Image (tube, rainbow, N blue to C red; front, top):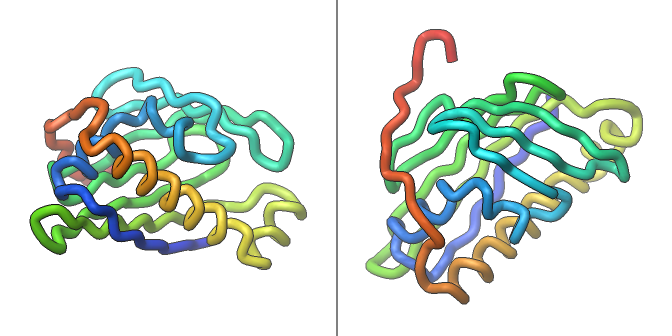
Length: 154
């Protein structure tokens, strides 16, 4: 499995950063290669992305969600992947967003790309675009303040 952890400090309150992250359908606006994210219900998402020039689709499940603290997920179909994003209040208008992911590279190109650090650079760039997106807006495009508790089967 490939793993990455990247953090970025954003100049918005923790609630604003968290609320924006829960707007999964806005991910194509700041995540390179993500064409569409459809939220099917509170915990199920359908993803469409271009990876190495190929369109990939998969289902993911939010396995844990605590307002203003964390969102965790895992894939239900497609290439195995899972992760967690956490939100740390640094001050009244400052938040550290940390994204941790792991996935199974598919094929030689993804395996080599991961080994060369392409994945880390991609995730770092996505977080930088998230920072630009949320700081330019100053407020979230929406919010979901519900809680999802990790189950024994997650």
